[in-house]
Length: 528
Image (cartoon, rainbow, N blue to C red; front, side, top):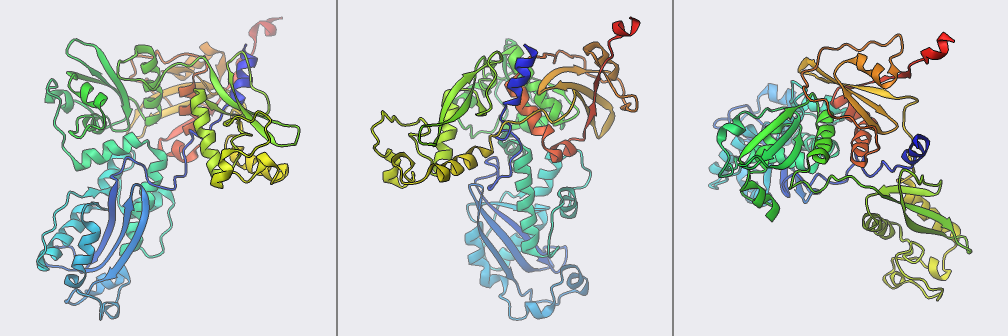
């Protein structure tokens, strides 16, 4: 059984769930944004003036426009500003005055969320410059400093220079408007890869809004919530568990549920029932994700529908037909039916697998007949997609099997099956960077979450030990509930482990340490 399960685990597709490298920003950000930076003659908006503006226009997560302009401040440019920015008076000579660009700038800002690093500074300068030009400008800006502080609480400093250093970003002209605005964009892009849409939306909502509480919920219930990672629980007035969620910032995430612009009827219905909020803190986001997944399955809250145990999983199987073309089929698997070498991916349902292969077909011009998405019946007729120029003719012999199979291989490359990346079982040390005494240990093997441990010595109860030269520092963990223990394969836990274990940046952000384990020697043999 263990061998079969291990073989199955080797078949798992991790690429879908690992931290991506997105081409657009998370949908958790406001749909329409302007990422803006100003350079000025000084720090007082009522007195000093703007000398340069740079901005990026974002629509639905995509960068659609970059814009930069020098501005004649109509005052002398202080030497220390010249040294800081590299802007000299000659570059400002002949530049437009703010009033000359005010209408064009307003057209880019109106209807969009203003984003700036230390937004109060840039917003105050914009507001005063617009007033001097006879234009009223009001906005509720999104501050990327606050965004960083909320999501990356393990770091003490959140200035733009610290963010550049944190993520190893490069910048050609620091303290120049457009370059600094682009750093905000790249910071948001990094965050889109490291955090879920819900986490980002919750953080933005907390910065931009102060939502009203549900009618049955006392404000004291929210006041007690911490600004730290963990799991939260919603109950109704009769003690019925409604919902379990997790966050890197429990208070912000809980408050985001109560915004007046509910996205769907389920959110609105649940909000009207919430009368009590409970929570459990964890040292990092890693522990929060594990705990949320296990608790949802154990307690079955009525509004959690997405995390369920699945008995069957589905994969792609490929094989060559008589003409040498790779054909694809979707097959069910389970722990007693390990996949073959020519299987790719891992999906919860045939529908999910079908949807993904349809997307790949569009991207790589694959034939729906060869993918099993359109009936063939041996007719030899071209598939329907040839009429749309979305199939290059493999179904009617207009391209060779070699060329088609190359595209097929490229499409499935990202779904190649991955092995457990460690030679042995491992122990994950999860420690709160702000409170080093708060530590948890997680025992993992072959993509299975075996147990949450309070003390390192507890690994002996599971048949493992640390190498003789390894002794992780530890303190007694404050965790009171260590029920996260189940050595069966769980798809959702697997995806969580992949997001961290194959992403060194995510491991570093959360300060997680990996300790390799070895099996305990068989003492009974030693006695013989």
